[in-house]
Length: 528
Image 1 (tube, rainbow, N blue to C red):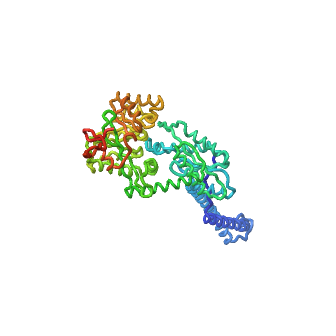
Image 2 (cartoon, one colour; image 1 turned 90 degrees about the vertical axis):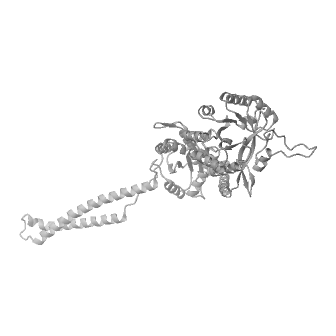
Image 3 (cartoon, rainbow, N blue to C red; image 1 turned 45 degrees about the vertical axis):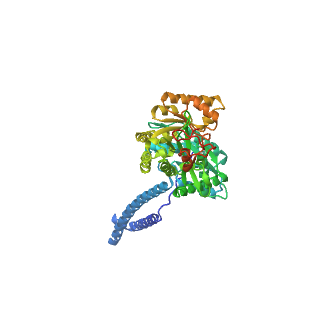
């Protein structure tokens, strides 16, 4: 059972003092009543002829005082009880979470402070629900609150005696376990319980949990323990979510480096340091240049030319990918606007960007401002883009296609819902993931997968593009299987715009006896 984290209020000093004074006055009046009554009553019942009128008046006054005091004491008792209840409710609200009934951040800090005073021991768990935002966005906040309540119930059931738990905010929770030796087992039970399919009214869903653990030990304080567990949790998230990890100093260093990189990226966007590079897309049938895929590069004064693998994920997770991507796309459209009109540009859109309902509007606005033809633009999306909010993604895709923009399904074969996506979405191209192309000549399974995808493309009348072609043997194999286009180091690496434009620049006459720099086709493109 989880120990309560609410606080017991102290009674109001002023009300208690007033109650004490009234009680004393009432007792004094009662004593006086007894003394006076001892003299008045005999004469009142005719036992004494020496009845004094003053004593009768005193008797009546004391009776009135007693009645008044009793009524006043009763009122004060009720008022004090109400005040105590109100104080307790206010303190409970200050230290508890209304949605789950658990404690809040204030409560866990207070309880940890008590642990440190009595001899630090045990471990702290911090976790949040992976992709909780998706539940809120798809099913509404009422369903999200039900999920939070279910999480609170899970903690009450899974935590051992003398533990306590709090909701820190949003979908983030913390739990203190007095015995550090069992903390990891407790964390695994929480992960397992919450991983089971969940019914929330009419909604059925499934979630995962990322948990960070930190030891409660001497030399630390409550805030530092919270920080350490939080760092460990984010380490789990970066490594794929749905797991647990104990804090270590290397995690802290990695987090510091990551935060520094996020700030560098933010400054680089403001300084306009991200630029487009262009990788050629080649027709396997004719060998002609069909267009380019736009790839982002970071021209950093300190780092040099930085590849996307070093900054795209950080930009996505820090919410900067939208600004970065749109700026690179704008530059690419400006550079390629005057290139031969038969050359297309393919641009990648991050799944994170599909959370923006105005994405299609922003892309169309760039086309208008740069004067780039929509029919020359191809937007590449992955299956992940369609999983969070399918209806919104479909609306964005259809809006782009209505303007003449082509849509390509990128990294095909790596997702679990590829075939279902092809049945319902109007893709203009399918791109086979490079992992299958790299293994094409090494095992029969990859060859069978590539052959199946190309056959699927022919049956759907959708051209197939292969990524990651690095050898002539792979090129020939893909051509034989029926792939329409290919890209990769065999045809050329991604280069800056002015270098890419040399591949279709007007032919320059060479001095006698020298071979031309490139073999050009009738369309002016380079032939591979």
